Length: 293
Image 1 (cartoon, rainbow, N blue to C red):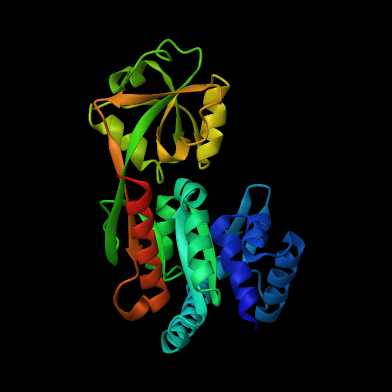
Image 2 (tube, rainbow, N blue to C red; image 1 turned 135 degrees about the vertical axis):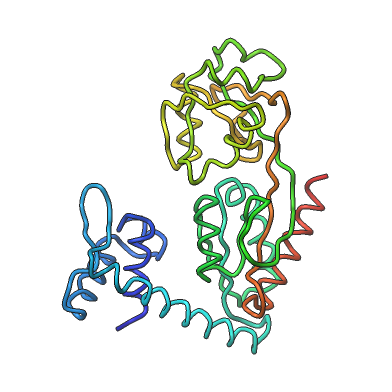
């Protein structure tokens, strides 16, 4: 069976969507569906249940998904070993990232790295903190941007202290103030990321012992900004994520007391990190030195 069929199954399951799996693999949703159907015919049983709620594993699928992941990881290990032999003359580099880094850092980094090493294929996986840590642990990426501190295993490099800001509708009572007291969150409708992803806001609120009145939850950072813009509540987000939203119908205020997140880079441990991953990390560190104090 082709590796692409295994990839289609795993991506559809992890992303909970055939459409998202297709977008990541660079193929259509119908092609993903066809590959999954073909794999299921070969196995002789259903692997995935598809419904309006998304994509779930069947009981049979739960028994084999770890083996599918293992097959793909072994293939990736083979490709990495071949790349190590070739050095930086070719091969592949897989990068895990969250939204703010993917939007504001990676385009320039990828342009510079690809200009110097055009024969190295770059693949970007974009998710939240939880996704990136899982990809690193499962060997699905060679390096990933994370929030520090983290218990994940690998070589970790602290890169940048990124302030957390309160974001409010432009007509909010505090919108024209210089700072936003974190304790005031207790009196507001709060828009949050899913709990598995929302390390930043919860870190800020934990400093003052506040439990927010969560009105809405989403996995999409930019959906939160749009909801705040419409006056549905307030939120707390990293400053880097908010770059470019100066003209939007929101106010951005520093928190009192101040809170920040530490953006880091994690390279897979041991000999799993090939020369391309190590070289790319050098580009990342130089980018930070040149663009941020």
